[in-house]
Length: 299
Image (cartoon, rainbow, N blue to C red; front, side, top):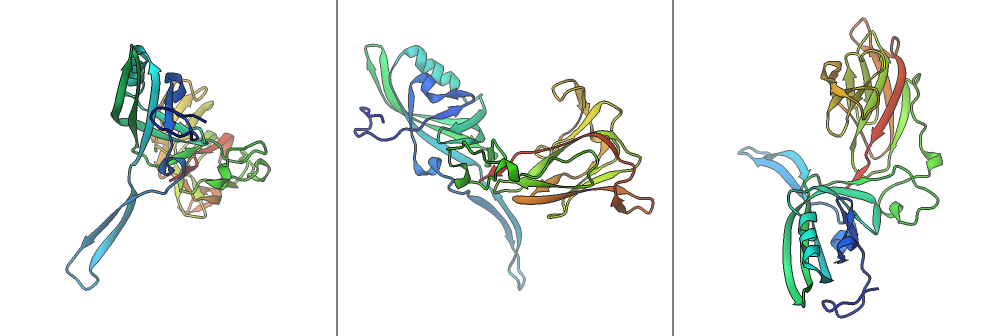
């Protein structure tokens, strides 16, 4: 509970972390409002076109707009150096993750776009005042930091997403699987990253039987190299050794597409191109490593 000269009554204050630094580091108090404390949905741009014919127009779909967080803050009795540190922390050249204290299970990738000063008081070199910080998520999705619920969780994650118990999660795929399940607890479609090591004589396909999105791979790199097809960014990379080691572009191994995951349970099949040019169950695909990753997200 906190009271201040700017807000005459005591009320609950919740903090936030930007770019790995909590607001309390600079003696900043944040006054949350409903738009920040709860997931209020998203605004959409709708793409359509009116034409002179009997049906009236074409509808091209919609896209979620950028999400802007307007954070009302105040500080009391800080030094001039602390003010400069705040300016550097929130400079427009920076970017990072925004995490709210009362929603630690989700983050947004944001950029500071406005720092609007309010009333500032100087009391013998100690500064107190208010400001509004605008952080813009040009990718409007929030990303969940976990894929399942834990018995010790007390952050109400299930109020916002569909986490299930760890014991209910589908098993990770093995190198011999031709079909496996993936559970996406997010409320939005997300991309699935595929990492493979091994060999194959024919092109292979990963396909989501629930939405028909697919990823076709021409070939696999030589032994002990990892092919990484990132379902979020579309990047295709060959790694030497660990994923933090040296790497090069892997587009020569990738034919087309990425697999996307619907919210909830998804069934993924691994197919192989046959002599007739069609797709059938895997045959010559010999994997030594398979890993699936994804970032559940919400609006």
